[in-house]
Image 1 (spheres, rainbow, N blue to C red):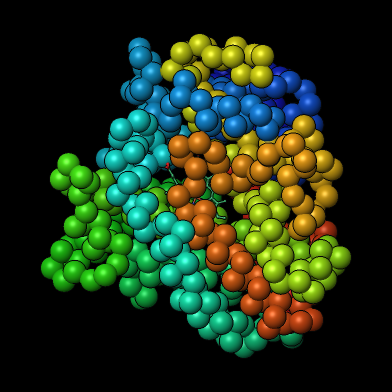
Image 2: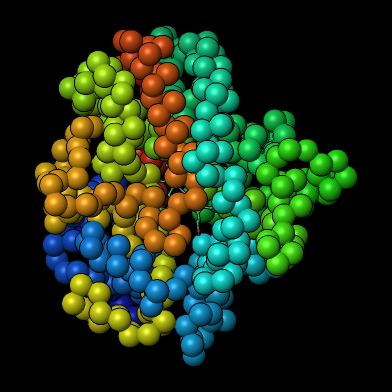
Length: 425
Ligand code: HEM
């Protein structure tokens, strides 16, 4: 495991560097070893800046995400130098200062009544009922993409990330929100620039996205439609509290970005997992009713989100028997919790029939836990179910076009993803 120098303080062998290529290439093994070292470890996200705590054990992850003594916004920790934290964040992420609020004041940064208000404004669009109403449209988009897939193949090999895993969720979320078809390729490029933290690319992409959403809001105000954007413009909660334009842009930004990158890589990781586990693939092909459980297990086994946003202790708290001081930051490492043998028997085994063991209610935390539990979980699960179902039905001989060890990962802290998934149809 690598170490990092902390702003001139010299390398600290006990400090986990979340940008360590070995850790990014093997987060399950890497965090697995860290998980056994101590309940909490010190780490830095960008290889510089103030260290944070990493919670890697299942119970501790759930505690940090579910306990009201942890908040998402450092401004809610009495006495903390919030300005300093914001400046560090802005600098670390390369965000231009005038765009900071779009990145630092979103739904994931809100606590208490602020969070409830924002969540209530959009949650209507993501209820189980609304999501099941969307199913026929998700199926149609999926079938259309699969119709076109063979034509994208070269020498019988199709690239599934590019031509299926990405276009499906981005089409779904853009339709839902109300982003016109001709603008969607730009969103994909912007999303990529943002998550890969391309040098200088993040600021530019963010500026274009923000301008684009402002422009769309203007268009919807003039000509309302039935999309989420129009709904947000009309929305006000029970107290008649309207959303400000900046808040609306920030919310739409979060929805579009959270709604496609993650789901795309669940589809990519999940397909690769099935293709490299022929027994599980055969089981699923023989009994498609297993699909919801299969998606649940794939989220546990190879979910695309490695860790949550940082949480801040609003007072001194004990986590896993270790003290976390007031104001200190903790990050919950989901991929590690999902492979914690304390919670899951034989956690490295992919088992699409897995059920919580008798007397143990544990389930995966790939969508987070607590008040900030993923708003789009039902939609993401549905997209994955439809995607895997149609892919397996339409291509009965689907197989990997490279050896499993030849699958190329895109190395990124926080995300577990394939760069490409070449398959024979
Ligand atoms: C929150 C994962 C798909 C919208 C979260 C969180 C996780 C997560 C782990 C909690 C982060 C934290 O507590 O710091 C995933 C995964 C997905 C997925 C693995 C796909 C496989 C989606 C989709 C949407 C979405 C499709 C929207 C359409 C959101 C939003 C939040 C969130 C708005 C913030 C909720 C809040 O702060 O109350 N997601 N997500 N996600 N997700 Fe997802």
